[in-house]
Image (cartoon, rainbow, N blue to C red; front, side, top):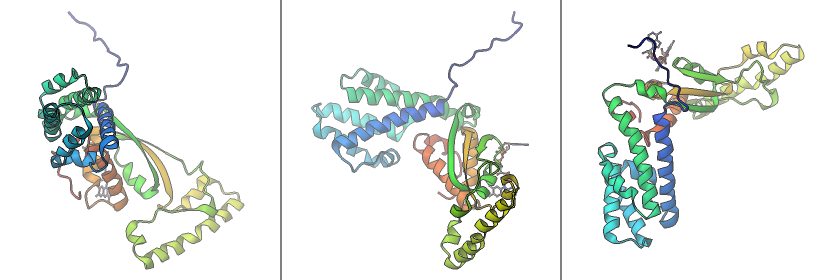
Length: 283
Ligand SMILES: Cc1cc2nc3c(=O)[nH]c(=O)nc-3n(C[C@H](O)[C@H](O)[C@H](O)COP(=O)(O)OP(=O)(O)OC[C@H]3O[C@@H](n4cnc5c(N)ncnc54)[C@H](O)[C@@H]3O)c2cc1C
């Protein structure tokens, strides 16, 4: 008979998505090793997304290798298959390669094995809409030199944690004020001139207010939304999917779309399955 539950404390949080990133980064580094040794013209990301690029790996590897052609052929077929259908890949192939005496082959196989193990757990769950495992993995990133108007849109996504430099404690230097100007305005010389003229008086206004003893916490009320800022964000992978889907949309504003796109770019290569069930507009 049980009366009270037990609690297991994890030494390290269960973080499959970031584990996958680590293994993937290792694989990418091995690939960089291939590139450095053999050639420069095969891009890892291209190869991952476009399997037609993969025969090049076999060619490159076989060029200088002392291994038999047959073995290389088998090896490249296996990698080829794994790039093509990572999750349906038979793990037994990798188990065989794990015994390889070739250190490169062994290392590559080991990393793929770890990476696929991480994906094997999580990808089918996402596919069937069981997304809560994604909430245990959190991506932390910092967006630098963005506008306050962008961060105001960003923080509306409540299921994330944010830390932002306070304008109360950071004293803006009137002589070196800079602003985030939207691309569309920058591309329109007439509009750009009007905006720059509007901002040009701000430095003098800040200096004047400071001379009158007005504190930063009150001066900030005259700052425009274009004032640059940095913000650190921690967002779990379930919310990241949601955020990217909403903010990648052509209906979203240009600066926050850029942020959504950079996040998508960062994640798509090592977690392609996160996006296959979503209808992403604008990419
Ligand atoms: C193109 C675009 C235009 C926009 N325009 C405007 C605008 O003009 N004015 C404006 O005010 N906002 C606007 N927004 C912001 C929008 O209304 C949302 O506040 C913002 O997108 C965050 O939504 P979210 O679903 O990510 O919320 P989050 O807070 O990140 O929540 C994530 C999800 O959790 C659930 N959830 C969270 N809290 C609750 C709750 N209290 N009750 C029930 N379910 C909850 C919902 O399923 C929600 O989708 C706009 C957003 C976009 C993308």
